[in-house]
Length: 246
Image (tube, rainbow, N blue to C red; front, side, top):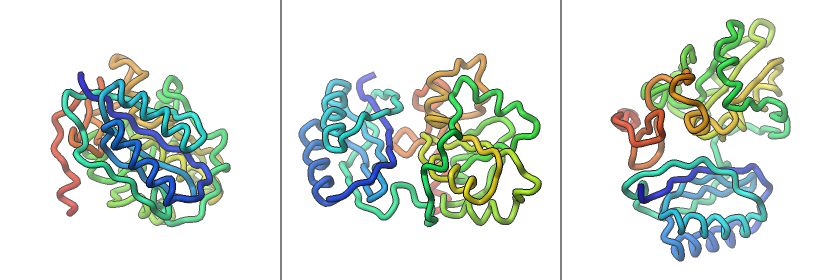
């Protein structure tokens, strides 16, 4: 497979966003990297692709720009998964429209190898934090579909359907982990006692858990030209159901 697709994020206080944007655009051009970068005062979020050797060099530059170590999820495809190079400055790197203290999420992460235990807990509420069209492509066994069209609709869903006095244990998952990284501390602040999130999201779970042990059902929607990936992180067969919402 010729092209590597990587996704990564970090909640990290940033300043001089315009300068960062220009540096990222330059590096993407130098190394022929395609995809999207979202940067904000709260951090960065990205999915990009390129040739294996170019991605490696690009990551070194990104780590220098952000003064950090990039932890990413990886998959491969025979064709380039993006056609454009985009760097966007936004208010949030994932839009919830709520003030969240990310540090409240410390201690809520569950590694892939322990996630099946969470799924098999009869007292656990398993919440898919993704959009309705993503859920329809594939999800974890027993997961609840909140039937939202965007991430910022989730707080209203929680308010209408759950009570901290009755619902003690909630486990969250999303594609790469970023939505849960924000929603887990949001739920903790709302008073939910036990909140768990799948570390690294679905993509890391599919990477680390064998098909024989996996409790994933269907394919995983991804935001690039592949549309979805199967349990082996190869291009799936699903159609782009997001188009129905447009």
